[in-house]
Image (cartoon, rainbow, N blue to C red; front, side):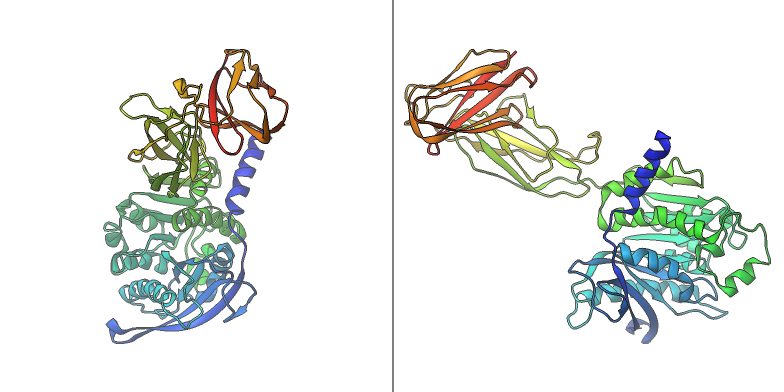
Length: 492
């Protein structure tokens, strides 16, 4: 029961990642001037605030484009299952209607698919239409049967398409298998275990084997048929009725299995939601309804944090800053005195900055940051190049700056006793202060342990209890709002 619950939770995490949008629709006939002004009539479905024709797009986000190619002698109406699943998840789905006759030109259809990707992205960069500033730079070309095979042709015609996917792809007259051998972008191929129209070995399987993709996956829907990748369609069903075996699962089940893997794969590849890949893999490896092949040694592009800078430098602390990386679970920072070999490292940080505490005044330091790529903290980017800084000088008056401690003129002079201790100790000031005294305690990797604000008019003797913390060195920072001093305390 616990195992089944775990799988259910993983599946729910896959299917609930994206906001659900209403579905808007429009029809556009694109003109490809490079092919004698070829006309490409296209139905387009997109995320909207309300359902309807030519209604505005929802929100202000830019949405990735999925261009889908229909099967032989099939109309785009047979693929409502595709756009009704993807649009609510935040995708613009375009379905060119060309090459629907008995003698289709596969190369032309592949070029049509490729052109519509470019045409829609151009509209996103052009003012005066509903897609202005609403098209993302990422895209997928996809299709079923003939359209699936032509999707691989489209990739060879337009190298700017991000990824390719296909449902029961067919080998085409201009060879999809041959085109696959030139494709290095990520690919996802679905096949049906009982597909008698485009048997896997000579079609989808051969295309998959030929792919030069750095990350490719083929998912076989056990008991699935060729036509059940689409909605019910007379022409497809008639052709399928002349061969065997027939499906052993129903159409609804087959659609659900496709969406179970297609949606998170698109979310990962086109929206950079890296957790979707991890969740997808966890389900795929345990799903008895499918079998699969995969060659994907490096699915993540876990990049370095960018634009590192150091701000807020004082005698005892500094703030490390950076901007976001891709495929990020979190970050880790490490720092050290310049020209030393021992680093102090932080735990995983879910922020774009980190305050380094417990530093010595007038001392040169350096820090680096790296991306944590997964929730288990086993995959990382490289460390960034060192960012160097020097702490400010402290104006010493009866105090000392040894071992990271500093006191400044007119600052709070205090003692800690006992030190070392078992976690219970007192911070005692040697004079009165009218202003509230702020006490902040950190561990040596900069994690905030405790914060107090105390009004002290008649001396200051503040009890601190760190007995619930692990043994080690802690930084006690205290300030009257004008000057900051620090001391180290050893908990045994």
